[in-house]
Image (cartoon, rainbow, N blue to C red; front, side):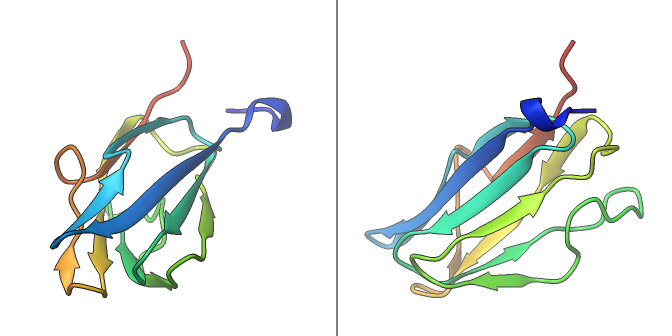
Length: 111
């Protein structure tokens, strides 16, 4: 578990370039208790997080974020290590964003 001094705020940008919607970084390595700030650049987006092992470590409802806005999501301090895929729907071109592959959040405690 992170102390207040070691909590990191990670930033994820979402943007449309040509006919593709992109998420960068596509793979994000975080620790339990960190926060992730999603920043759509030139499109409204809806963030979608599925349930993992029937546990809601991330929001379970779709969350809409306006272009040029931002949304910070704190991660549960007891979130287990693992890979957590998510989806970003881009309203500007009616498509799902891609990253290095489908975007994922990788939770890993410091060793």
